[in-house]
Amino acid sequence: MKSKHILCLALVLSGCCISIFADIPAYSPDRDWVEKHCTTNTVPKDERIFLGHNNSGDYASIVHYHNGISLREIVDQTPFKDKTVSVIVMRPEWMSNNIVIKPTEKVAFEVKPLDVVWIYDQTPIF
Image (cartoon, rainbow, N blue to C red):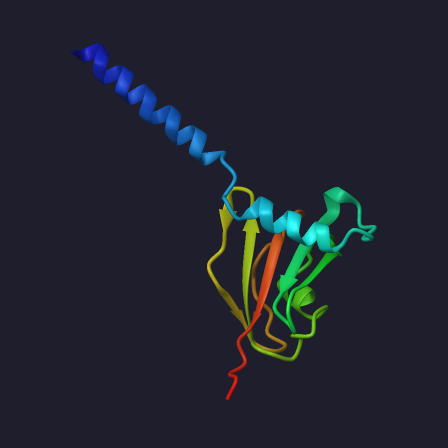
């Protein structure tokens, strides 16, 4: 009986370890989508930040990562620079909650190379 418990525990723990290193389902397709829309981009592959937003339909861009780049700097490179936006940052193993950024507001968040950043306009339609 004791060996069955050990075997069950080992299987559960191995499953946990596998799920920790698994890609979140949306990261790869979203990153691929941005890359497909930015085929002429010349930013080195390991220094890219993948950017998408919903301004007049689909939009994708790849920006150059540099040490200390902020979400404010990324938003300022889009048509949303003077608007309140909601940002979601995705990594292979993790995804942020919505981060709301008001115009000119700086948010303490560490952007990393290969992040996928989605920006959504929060300006009311009415």
